[in-house]
Each structure stands twice: as structure tokens, then as C-alpha cells.
Amino acid sequence: MNDSNGLGSYLPGAVLLLATVLKPPALCRNPRDELLRSVCVLLALAAAKAGRTSARRDSTPSAG
Image (cartoon, rainbow, N blue to C red):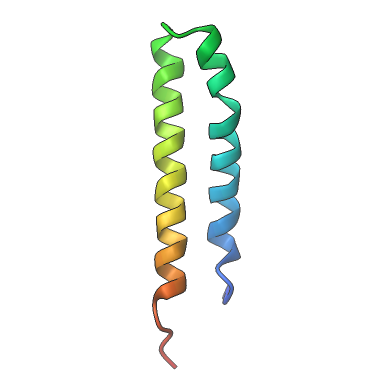
């Protein structure tokens, strides 16, 4: 499937960002929960990576 707008990479990034935004209240309630802290960090890193990948894809000139 050819996605010329790159929406296929924005959707997972948006979902990861939403999940990252919803986790800090739970982290405030349980600050010593190591599993929750690691999940928050992994979600934030994955959302940042998804955002960088889609931004890089948008700035790359297309061949053709």
C-alpha cells in the first residue's frame, strides 16, 4: 500500500502519544512502581521515535 501522505506513521505516533499522556497520573499515585516507570519511559521514547521518523520521511525528497 502506497501512502503518499505518511498517515500510516502518524497514527501509531498519535496513539503512543495519547498513551504517554494518560500514564503520568498513575505514576503520580504510585511513584515507586518500577514497572509503571519503565512503561512510561518506553512509551515516551517510542512516541518520540515515531515523531522523528515521520518528520524525517516528510522532509525527504521523493524520487520520481
